[in-house]
Amino acid sequence: MSQRVSFLNNNEILIADQSNNRIQHINIQTGTVVKTFGKEGEGKGHFKTPLSICFDDTERIVVTEFKNNRVQVMSKEGEALFTIGDNGPEKLSTPYGCVPYKNIFLVTERDNHVMKAFDASNTFLYKFGEKGNQDGQFDAPRGMCLDGSNNLLVCDSNNNRVQQFSLDGRFTGKTTVPLQVKYTF
Image (cartoon, helix red, strand yellow):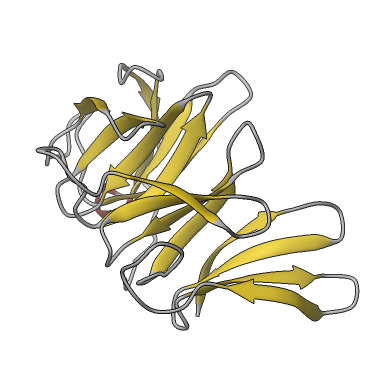
């Protein structure tokens, strides 16, 4: 079961293959697997439930690992470069999604109901949110993305809404009609 897909170019995609604990590089024109990388484990280049995948500004691959409680940053070829959120007092727990912006990595923590920000040297910068259903609060935040104006859009799954924030965590809006979607993971 794959959770997230990221476009590499017009003909190729990367898939976070959570059931097989690997990343698959696929040519969508031919339907063939170009290569796979990673395997189950806790070491560098290994994965435990990779949930989301995207690219940062320098075209490095960014993979959020739910069960390893970290984000791995890899070269475009799949070589593990560094990890984020895997140590220190603000160590990640149940990370679900990651959005890299310049040298900042914004990560949702599903079970702690917060967003955390780290830099590329794995230094914790700030966090925002708490459990609840008011503006700026979360109940199991999951996926997220940046819009064209660099607003952070966060899927606040158990509150059935999408919330909008500035990159420093200031609440700036939300969907006005509740979204009726049930998640199983």
